[in-house]
Length: 210
Image 1: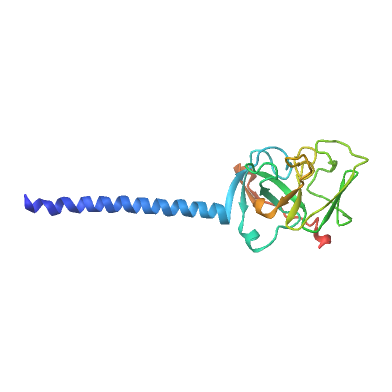
Image 2: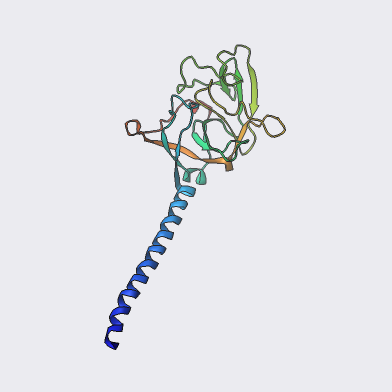
């Protein structure tokens, strides 16, 4: 009987070691997963039509985070962020104004620092009215000065987007800007559906403003 004890203890120790290894590996994988999502990149699904035709409802995208750890968001970046009045939600829009910029919405057009933008990523007939969901805006004229550390954003579907034009705080005062710490990252690639896989196109619209 005594000679059998060593043969029993070996598989028991091996099984225990196996369980410990599985638990350790699982913890490492979970930590790495959340680290990657928090610091490097994360997947999101586009909900709604506010970025049509740049991004379609239901598409899955990858948002990168590292470049905003080492650099600043730029005009033209398509970003995912928490909007000012809904910190538990995620929105996706395009940065139009960066800190210090003056953004003017005038008769359906957008001006940044006095220069009219030729927004080639918009539908030809799409107007940028000061009130979202409007089709025409011949008398519109409103100017925003972007504070330090904040950003002015608009959806590419200007008549169907909740963005800097329409946000208010709890006291019903305009709250049009996104802060840097609300930004989750920059949209880099569409990964699903498979026929629509593509890199996000760059834009030269803002080059003349630099």
